Amino acid sequence: MIGGMQLFRLLLAVTILWTPASLAAVQSGVPEYDLPSQELIFLGRKLFLDRRLSANGTLSCAMCHVPEQGFAQNQLATPVGINGRAVKRNSPTLLNVRFRTVLFHDGREFTLEDQVWSPLLSRREMGNVSIGAVLARLRSLDDYQQVFSRIFATGITAANIGIALAAYERTLVAANSPFDRWYFDHQADAMTQSAQKGFTLFLRHGCANCHTLGQRVAQFTDDKFHNTGIGFARSMEAPVRGTRIVALSETVSIETTQSFESESLNDLGRYEFTNVPQDRWKYRTPTLRNVALTAPYMHDGSLSTLDQVIRFYMRAGIANNDLDERMLPFSLSESEISSLLDFLNSLTSSHIDSLTRDARSIAVGDTVSPDNDPSTPHQEKRTSGPFSR
Ligand code: HEC
Ligand code: HEC
Image (tube, rainbow, N blue to C red; front, side, top):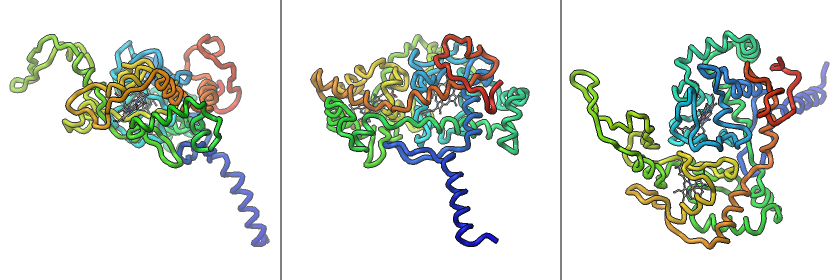
């Protein structure tokens, strides 16, 4: 017979053994979070890095959300998808993406689980012609068959692919920056004097009206949509070389511009989701966490440096009829500009290296083996576990 106290002790021991695996440490500056099982995370990570998820086996998620480039892409203003096709917007960072309440620059998706089907099915990104095509490909691969059926009673399904990828993406929490240690943990010397002055300027010039922060948590975004003029400027610049009438049926015809036909990738921002005219050229406020790692900037990658971004705000963005009323001009001395830069640079997490190392710790798919791929920066290899091959 187990007595009451023994039962209590047993339960306590079991709880202590079970909780730490799934509960992640809280990092200052971001909300509390927990993590799903390791096996699910490993499966998601494998999918994230696997080029076989694209129609022709060339492109993985990690090629546009590059671990070494802040899980964004530094090389191009807007990435190149399957068969060299242009993608119209800049790759956002996936660091801290679990905290976003709306996804994409225009907020057209809401959960990470659903979001994965956008890139998988986009003809400009991973080029799969259907959900079924992706499922059939994964089902033909032994390594995935086994792991999926170990984790999910339903095996390889569209929903389960989303669940696994989302599980991995939710591990990409990157807080504990010098700013967090200074602001939330009250370590006076965690951030330089200049960066502290930069933070004062950040507040004084209204940056925090949109890149918001609170008493215990700082996301540096309101997850809302604003017109700063970038989208307007981009649309105005698109050359219109004359129009043409295209007959869609005997009674319906549309007028197109040549630039539209040559896929100039017109971008109307939030309007594309809401169809509300006032939402034209509004884009979601990006988080500023780890912003030093995620150049180039803005939804179209049109500003290459943070210095350019600051000068853009000093001019109150780009004037247009629907410019957000919080966009007001201000002036800064050169030394104030460098303080504001120091502040933005102090938002880089101290966890980046471990997230990058983790992403590169497995060999995936039938691509070049990381052992002889010179572009693989890390030596550490997983030699046992579900995905050793
Ligand atoms: C060809 C490049 C490319 C590939 C491949 C790609 N993405 Fe993206 N990703 C982008 C771009 C560009 C955006 C922004 C698009 C927009 O806002 O309209 C984006 C947006 C996202 C977002 C929203 C982030 C946010 O802050 O709202 C998530 C999440 C995401 N991608 C995950 C993935 C996953 C998972 C995969 C693989 C299944 C993947 N991406 C493959 C380029 C790519
Ligand atoms: C009216 C709201 C608003 C205000 C005020 C504002 N921002 Fe922004 N910020 C945005 C939006 C929206 C974007 C994205 C625009 C786009 O994608 O075209 C952005 C983009 C940025 C980016 C680029 C981030 C990236 O990953 O691309 C930086 C850096 C930035 N803002 C810093 C600041 C600073 C510094 C200030 C104060 C001087 C400021 N912002 C004031 C809304 C605002």
